[in-house]
Length: 363
Ligand SMILES: *Cc1c(COP(=O)(O)O)cnc(C)c1O
Image 1: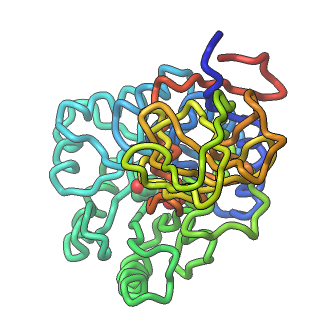
Image 2: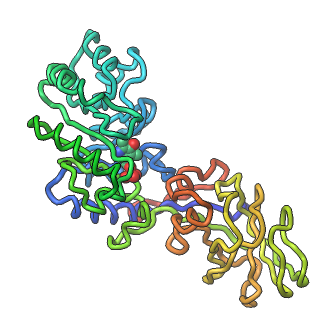
């Protein structure tokens, strides 16, 4: 019998979320960011569902785009880091991928390519994130060169460093620089990710470019207003229960100490599965339909929870580590990280099951 720990991917929830986001986008164009294996949800499975709702996909680098094309996805694909070497340019033209160009060198590679036709090119301006992007002073020349390369199909893009806080000094500075750039050209624009879409940032953006929202996440604690459903559920079952006396401790280092006689349940999931070792005592875990608290350090293969107040919980009880309740964002809060990191770091040893009304169960 297999270990009960598994990750469920609910493609109907993804389809639902895509409809909600499509409606939110109104007449703007919509790109779904599915880099990093669709934030751990399974890139090709997700792309097949999303393809009918979005105008394009975005991935981080070429190999991810190649995997999409190999999976039969014909939707336009933007590669957010563009080609990383001149040799990659050929793959962009052959697979009809849109490069996000962030450095003049990359323009040069496309100009040198024997077969130059690319159907779309995005030019990334550095408005203050200072990670990728062309300096604002160099943008006019870059736009001219990009226009020649793609018969005019150029989209201007930039990325906000503090997207959830449009009033912050950093956002205001970026938004001002962005607006003064895009106002000078009659080109399509793309600025807004999940958080800035939710706060209705004022930045000009013909294209929305969310990722995390599609998976039902709440970036920066935002998004409760939207009716989104979590696509991922990480679940297991109780495999052991013991009674311990007041004063005893549980787990490595004895971090958790019983303040009364206590009942402890053990669940076979640990940091080697992607459950965060940084999770504090008190982190919520749903056991047998009740929210109980993590008690003791997360081990490599197991966690322990305090079920003293839940005498009805037995061996074999259902466990949800994250899903509807608690959400992945709740667990991230308890581990000082973000849900993006947890979702994308569920490891290979966790069994995966994809569910959908339109699909026979598949493991
Ligand atoms: C990852 C990424 C996004 C999507 O961000 P979310 O917060 O998931 O919406 C958008 N734009 C760029 C440039 C990115 O790298």
